[in-house]
Length: 113
Image (cartoon, rainbow, N blue to C red; front, top):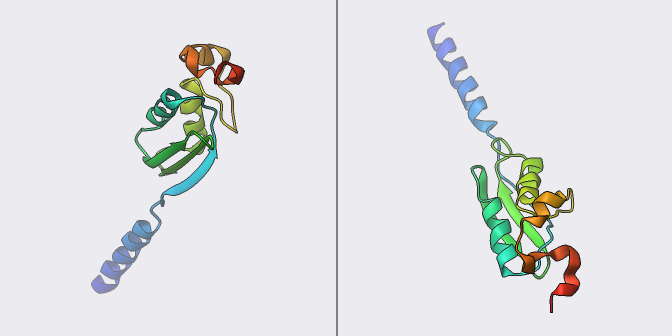
């Protein structure tokens, strides 16, 4: 009986270990106009739960690997918005957008050569 109890506990702990949340990688559009934007966007999502990230300024795409048990995709979009940048899912408020540097004003791209 004692062996069965130990075996059952081992199986339960193995099951809990096997159900650990795996990292998820996704890619989505984020507005940006210059190298400063790239750095700001990457810094905004360099938080606990994010394992890897890269913003491609040319394609305006953020590729991010994160642990959904620690941070959600909605929270990632919110962090980017808080930094002043629009994403394919949500837009920064005017107040957030107005805090970014003048050369980063991507909503009026005609300002950029």
